[in-house]
Length: 338
Image 1 (cartoon, helix red, strand yellow):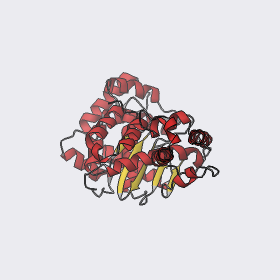
Image 2 (image 1 turned 135 degrees about the vertical axis):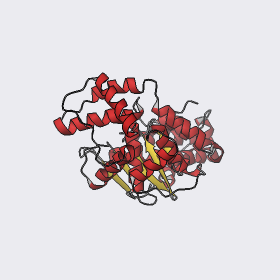
Image 3 (image 1 turned 180 degrees about the vertical axis):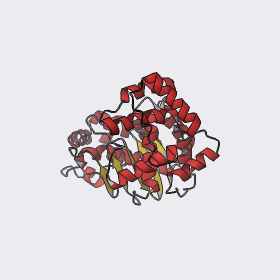
Image 4 (image 1 turned 90 degrees about the vertical axis):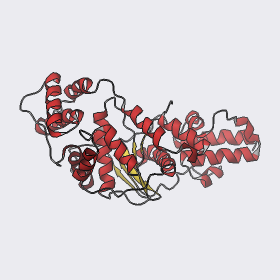
């Protein structure tokens, strides 16, 4: 089999594995790559190595033209998923996100700091540094200062199911990957606090991953309930804080409530608005998320949480520690434009 034909065969196998050839080329191969060069056996071997490393696929399975492709071992995995969703449906996004996290962990020099098991202890630490509340920027900085990289990954193969987030420990270093996209930081703030809770409560095993398909504040499953309580305690000071009103607030009324509570209790105003919506869901079965989002458009009108995460990645990662091809993969899968 000629090398060009073998390359075509690789693309066909990747397609059957759920990774379109266009995606594989765009994230795994360097800019300017020419498939025709794989007529050279050494270049073909290089291509297989790049696919294995960047797509987290077993090199041995890639090298055997007749074998089914297999993911590399990502360590023990715990899935928190919708019962209608299989673990296999989350595996593609998990393995790609894990690879991004592994690269980031290799490029962080900050010492790993033991995370307190108490959300309030972290809250007090953040407030002592001068923050008015535990907001998105402050919590991101806390994670990075403690040696925990926080990434936002959004570029996955078409059809791959994306979880909200995952937390993992790679070569002893914790990492958090958020995949949920939202235009308001308040939504990602709770997700970040929840994932930090999984790390602080030691729900994540060494060289293991915990995948949260959808983070639900009403979830009663032990580890999820514990991570939720940790997050609420971190953001508000107590694990059961609820801002509930008997009447249905308008967006403007919710803005006023959020700003008043924020000033009084040192709580991020955006989180107050979302807490109100969550409380309504628990009380009435109807979460007032449309009202909360309208309030957030006033509370944080010009925010871009994904850009904020990307800015931290640019500032905090030692990009010189990342090889050129891995750097291309990480920036591509994160959709980093700068």
